[in-house]
Amino acid sequence: MDKSMFGDVESLAEEDKIRMSTMIDQLQIRDSLRMYNALVERCFSDCVDTFRRKSLDKQEESCVRRCAEKFLKHSMRVGMRFAELNQGAPTPD
Picture 1 (cartoon, helix red, strand yellow):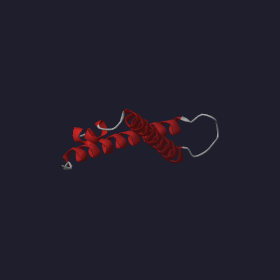
Picture 2: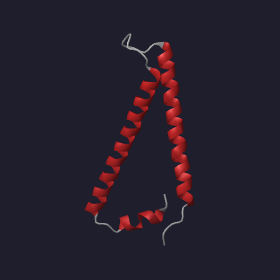
Picture 3: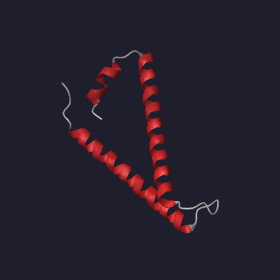
Picture 4: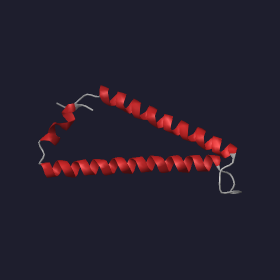
């Protein structure tokens, strides 16, 4: 991120900085849980067909592993692309 984005944050009172930091942490946790839930829902619905037993069979396990890897690679690529675009964005003066 651009350091100029944090210029106004430095001028905040310590209590406000702590509040802002807590809010950012909560948003990051929320986003992580959303991504995890989306991953579980997507891979489960794509890979699990029946409930014959408690554990996954080999085909289901392989499908879940492949699905999770693709989902995470996609998420990483989107994050990298977003960072690339964010670096090239003009900064307000």
